[in-house]
Length: 367
Image 1 (tube, rainbow, N blue to C red):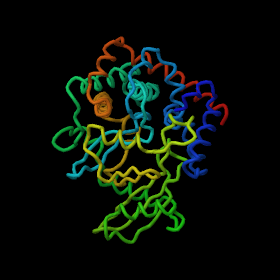
Image 2 (image 1 turned 120 degrees about the horizontal axis):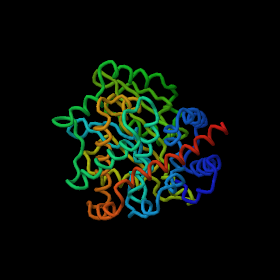
Image 3 (image 1 turned 90 degrees about the horizontal axis):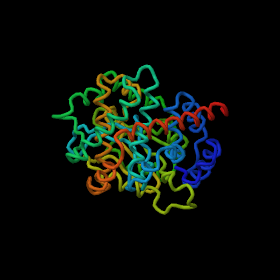
Image 4 (image 1 turned 120 degrees about the vertical axis):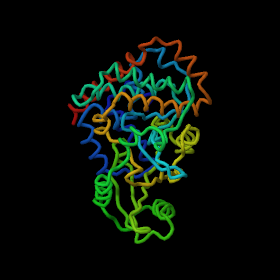
């Protein structure tokens, strides 16, 4: 998030960010072109693709919202930043899926950004809740865990409704693997040496033959080098992804960040959740397992969830799981939020959404 970039146009802010990102990885031009196309699809997609612009959008909120205490937070939270993984016990877990933009920011920033993404989606016919209902539901979920303590989302004996939404059916599992194998296959020497070694070392021992692919996925991270290894192991396919690591855009004014992924690692480690044993956040690459049950929940699944209110409530609770771990408890967060008016998140998220909409319309005129 470009702190000094509130006066910049969205085009200028994008160029500043890309020039800075190029210090940490070789830009993938094809991915950047795809990102530009995807961002034209909707204001929500634009919000996802321009995470480095969030400080400009957040600046539209009241001073009392922006003056909240700062902790290590997610930074790039939105309705699609949730997914599933298997923990050390093999249990299916659900929660926040990506910590690439984790940084020390006002704790309210995450709440406003998550609610802003819902406000933008609430304008679509498929969305079941109004903007105000969405903001209220997220905040109610967040407060639930502030009051009663954190609780990881393990989809075994509890949260059956969420398991039904998140777990892949047999046909969806086949589609998942077909989609992975339709990516562009590349020769192993075409991969950066470190990425190649990480992918091989994180596959199960004996997995063979190994095939390598360039991977196009997500939206915000399009433009970063991203590779995938797929292999046969014990009668089925296994896959790992390596994505180039870049520091949070909060640091874009700095010429160099010594530990680019330090904040991401700390945020994951401190979060009140069952950790993903297949996730490796290195200094230059982030490696994760890919499977039908190690994936993000797509926006169309959110839009068509049988109980959308229940889902957004869970998102608020999971955000509290992360913040409580970072803040070392609820006292500082609760004491500040208690002083805000009841409708603070409604007002802040709608103001931020209007600024996103202005940026989006300016982007459409340029592209």
